Length: 415
Image (cartoon, rainbow, N blue to C red; front, side):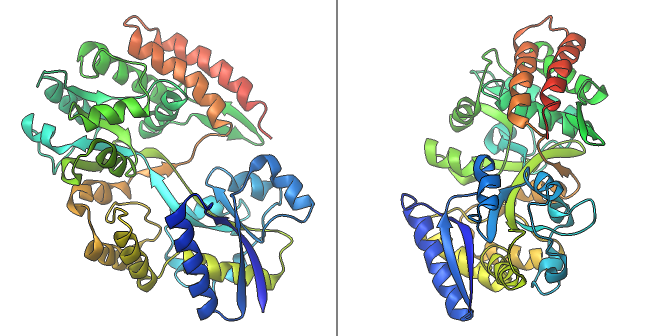
């Protein structure tokens, strides 16, 4: 018998999630009688992680966001699981771009992805039709977004073609994704040092596009300094054509504003890349080989579902009223993902055809993670977004140069 400690147990306040997790532990232990799961609440907290590891309190299997693995690998705070991966069912089918997040510069594997998202464009299908646009063929380039936004704004009655965030760090978050889509970076690493990288052609194109949509086309509305709740409300009221968001925004809008899933479509972000993220699990570097093998068995069974287990998940989720059919997470490539898509389509309670533009093109768009010290950088980039969207005479060159100096100071503290 091997006992393996894992975190990720939902708190008691999340009644349904906790119940499902405990059911899964019981089912897993029944089908794997030689493994016992010691499930604990909480996730990986960077503030306490090092102390827990040093004090022997860190779980054998611990949850991480996509922004965590690079540093953990560099500091030797995660176990090398390369030699165990070959025994993990479906591991070879994991999307290579996601597995790369958990792969070190040495080519060794230190964890497994279990969830992912990437930003695309959520759009109002009814407004597309009303504006003479084909809702089944949404924009695939930023120029097409600009054209569509102008047509939707021309409908009048307070309708806005495209909206974006610019405060509470959300403006910097979206500006990062814009710059990625234009082929640029927000920060790059030279050896062990990081430098700001957005004072570039991509940064210029991004701010010029936003400025022209706001001031030349008047397709972004006059009300600015928006954040996610404002934009979701606009979309829920039927007064917004498009905005940058992940698939999870759609159920939020439907639930909060009593809309129908049929109202909304989703397409991949224009350009070459998008901001994305996700989560996964890594392994305590002090864990024994037996615990690592047991932990991998649990992670694969619980999170990297086989098509058969996915059917169990989908059926249960539908009974709990959870939306089925949204295009993410998508952890696998090829035939395995195709089988899972087929199963989810059987249980779907959302219009999967509305998300086909996202699925068809998103694999061609590189997903890039957040820069280091992301929230501090986003605070600085908020100011850039705010200036472009509220000042007709905004000096783009100066905005990029000034912000770049500030971000360099933030990046100088990265360890």
